[in-house]
Length: 207
Length: 218
Image (tube, rainbow over all chains, first blue to last red; front, side, top):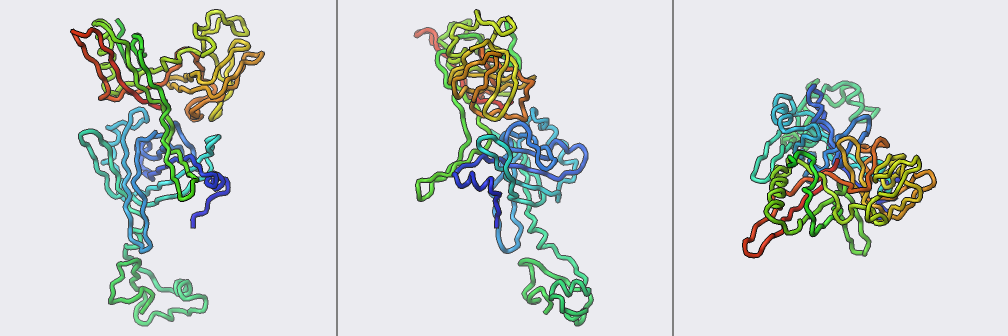
């Protein structure tokens, strides 16, 4: 359930809002600072000690979708480049490929401002995920870098191992579950999340 | 002859027709009931269409030289609202006006306070009237802001005047170090690269040239 701060809700109740989009790439490598945090307005926005560069419409974020099945959703972010933002085409195209961007986190956040004073009221996370691939589009009338991201649901489809110990047991079965009560033949067992559970294994909680 | 560079002015040729409007990025929703939900995405900007007076050969050359120097929008130019180059109350300029310190008022001054939709100007002549619909510009370094006065205001006994304006000032861009300008206030604009129209009709005589442009914010 999305909770909206009263101060933002009051503007929604009046049927109005001033909206901005924030994009934050967690690219910790040196030399990538220019392509890190963007704000859809002009100027600059400081939020959570992070300065977002006003890209003034130089990026466009595709529709955010979601599902309840734990399957990863992708999100497309189009990013143009503008020299006046300290983000020239060479910066983007020549340096981005030298950096390990794949798998770095991306956060897409919506910000609401007071319509009269333009003071930042609240922010709401809309998408959180990882950079997958970056495509360069150079068509007849436009050019941009398209960053394809995958949502954090991607983590659900990763297989891993869980060690069955006493604490683990109790967190699954409750405080009364005893030491290795559910483990009959192995001490370590593979657990599947989301839809990738093979039918033959039944549920993931021990069979 | 003038060499047109980045941030050059419009060529000094009469303008016959101008459209100068504020473009807002508004998304709305009308539900079953008549209530609308309105959201503003991104900052508003000025868009303009200029048509020069029909010109003879020499002016035509100046206009095409200026247009080509814009390099299709790689460069920006300084655009002003040709119909509102001076405040309504001072259509002939500020020649007889003096500031409080007896210096000549040239349409510029300093900024005392800035907020989203209001600014307090200093160093105006006492009793100076800024009328609704006048254009006022802000200059800070390379940055230019252009705003329309929302309500008539008069400078007080110390030459200060608080003015309501549209669109909002981005306070992360302009500070109180900015100066204001009331004579030909400008904003930076980029030409729409395919909007230029010009021609010569040897039978009919001179023809006007026209183009459109949009503000580059700051």
